[in-house]
Length: 531
Image (cartoon, rainbow, N blue to C red):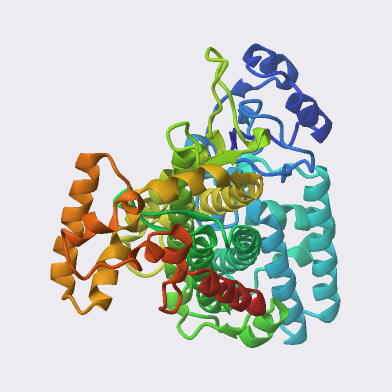
């Protein structure tokens, strides 16, 4: 997840001038005033996006954007200003303006407005001609934002105002009818749910791709034996395919959580108005149909005043990031010289500026680090919401930065981590050598004795003594002679050596979902059938 600082300027500056400013070199702060005749002011960080939402151009590298605030105010009329006798304080407007953040919602905002205008026309609240005129104007505004012809400015306060003001310039007084029966409260709640739905689908798709890659890895390494770990200590030999299928299961539950959340998110709040509904004959069901929502709100206060869906989304993403972080830790450890179980393609590793021999698992480290950022976003949202009285409060404006950052961070991490895993391979010869010589077959000895009718606690104690003996004598379990084994228990016979082979250990597992080659093949087959 990269960050940049976004450009803004008053509407007196042409888009050509702004685009010219976007090309200025990193750090050339002194060049900004001559170009824009304005004061430089860094206001806020917003998430890096693949496409610049305001100019339609690719976003420049990190630190090559600045927030530019003109000292010349347009004194635009705000949507709520008619009741007041003096203009809103300019510094207060800068402070409360959110267009640098919620500009990301312009597509959702226009989508919701098109549905609302269509419903208003169908209900006879406005004429059909006015409805069609508004819809056409909204689509024109969308094209202007996408092309860079319309550059939002901070005086517009938020993206809703940007769009409505421009619509008024394009179609005249009819634009004023768009807000009939609608508040910015249910408007932004609708935008947010549309954004959530889009990003739930986006991240779910990335999780599915991750699972597909893990299936390929599991199939490739089904018959490769590696160590399974507990407490970061070698525990028992397992199929490497079983290891990859464990991650497949975890990311599967992540998909299930998002699918379950989507059911709650895909309910329309449009028609709740400020919080109490409207006296106009609105048809919220029709608005929901137009927006492909599954249903409509059942309580207008709840529809506009809660952000539990945002919190739930960030929580679900936090668990995705937790899984990615744990997976990253394995990659980091296993690719080190001390383990050397796994190799990473040079395309997904970095070196050192001073130590030429270094090959660092930086992608995995960055994913692990970004997990903390998503956790912070979750705490941010919970803290914002914890003390708010019903219904809507302006504090809720602050839900957008953590929401947007979480969605972009999670999606980017999933994408790049999956591609990295695709370009890793296990060092099979080393794993085969290590698993054949290790003490991790001790559990097989204990279960061998259990099958000889020795109580497990006694079998455990006997095996512990054998392990201590092997360490003292510098032997591996397969190299201890039968005579030596029988000094610990007369239950041992020559069949013990059949169990002291890694593949025999793995394939002796009988329980469902275990690490045997057959079980792993069954897991893979079920997963493929479910795709």
